[in-house]
View 1: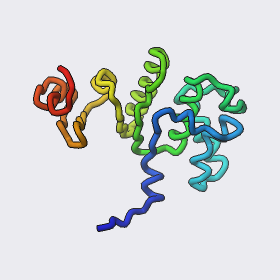
View 2 (view 1 turned 180 degrees about the horizontal axis):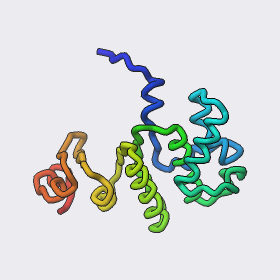
View 3 (view 1 turned 60 degrees about the vertical axis):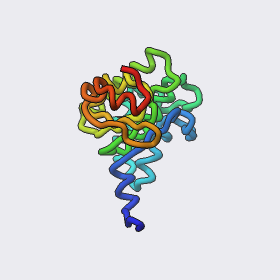
Length: 173
């Protein structure tokens, strides 16, 4: 059966950040890229500007960079702009697909630090990752999939010490 869903309401509550989100930047300025979502939500320009500045501040995008082209930025800066673009929509739930993929160790730690700070702000984070280290460090609940099926669910300590779960998912202790 088909479920009737208010897609607009879902989009206002949940946001998705794809792997390599910096590849989705397209506006002429960093400000406009971050403002894209709130503008599509039909918000007043004063509210759009507030959200852009707040989101930029959270992820460390400098005020001066808001007027620059996103294509002039480093890879790590582009990733921060992409994250700010999602945050500017002020989602209650944020789904992140491999957010640290392709980053050097410093960039990886920086992005994971932002994710932890979002969780501290009360945003529900769904983190999709192959990095068990990241999951163990950040998650309070872990859902393990193996061969398209649920292999286990629980706290990181419960999941990562259960040999049956790890075996079903093809993971090592």
